[in-house]
Image (cartoon, rainbow, N blue to C red):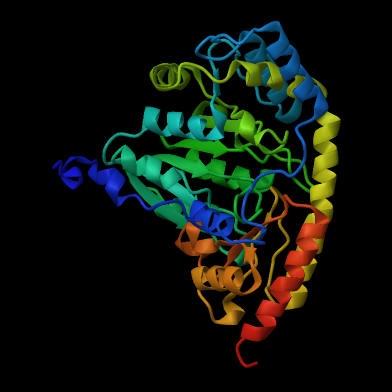
Amino acid sequence: MIDYESILSEKVKEMKPSGIRKFFDLAANTEGVISLGVGEPDFQTPWAVRKTALDVLERKRMIYSANQGMNELREEISAYLDRKYNIKYDAKGEVIVTVGGSEAIDLAIRALVNPGDEVLIVEPCFVCYKPIVELMHGKAISISTKQENRFKLTADELRSHLTDRTKLLILPYPNNPTGGIMTREDLEAIAEVLRDTNVLVLSDEIYSELTYGRKHCSIAEIDGMWERTIYVSGFSKAFAMTGWRLGYVCAPQPIAVQMLKIHQYAIMCAPTMSQYAAITALRDCDREVEKMTEEYNVRRRILVDGFNRIGLTCFEPEGAFYVFPCIRSTGMTSEDFCARLLEEEKVAVVPGNAFGESGEGFVRVSYAYSLKHLMEALKCIERFVKRHTQGE
């Protein structure tokens, strides 16, 4: 008999399963559940994108692309970022097409982190950053943000966590799970702290197109920050292309060269059909993205108003497609609230502590669902809260 416990990686054994997937799996095994747990657009991928993919299949052009990604797509990504955010990357040496934004994050962390390096992670946040840092034997240092600051990172919070071992700051805005954003003024303050250091920034901007009432600003736009920023984005959220598995990472060439080596050995290349389709998305789908964002905005306002009326205090998110209501008034932990809500009302949301300890006392609710779906869920949540609010 093989003693698997003795041969498996200790780092992997210590890793906790994703809290998002845990509740997604529970919901999948519950009949009649109303799920608000998955960050996946309910819109169809724009028709022009789908048509491009069909044309590619008919022409049988399904071959490997260049490791770095198709030249034409990298050029479109470069032009898109220049047009949208006034940040310039050389398509030849500073852009890599990846299998989703998640691979882009993985490449960046693996290319930078040595054993013992400290990586500052702004929380609450997407679940993959800390495990990847720890797999590289780095030290993940959480910076907890607060509802009273609209879940923004402040310069003082950043400054207080910097040490001689700090290698990287992971800046995830617009934020999953809170919907918080960083304005240009907010980013200027962060840049002021970092300019005289050797600390790099991994800026995860996958939700940059999904902002409400304010145009997104990238930290790479701020003076002195381009050369220390690794920019991550992709097509899953804004273009409703989650299953197409396509993202990209942009960085100064000395960093990009090292990331590309990892990509070559681990992945080879991103899906060719998806790359052709993404060219069309970047060229022709601005209006479709605007329409989806307008619809998300309607849903956002309904959920924020609904949760505040119910008594689950909810600040107004300005980005992504999540709300992050506080559930402390019920006297339950985040996990207890989610488990009991699923059991009693068959509504699935994600506990806030799945996104870091600072998320305790909150739950993440996705509004990437139809209005009918959201309104039905709100009614169920209201019944649940009335039954369980302390003092009633």
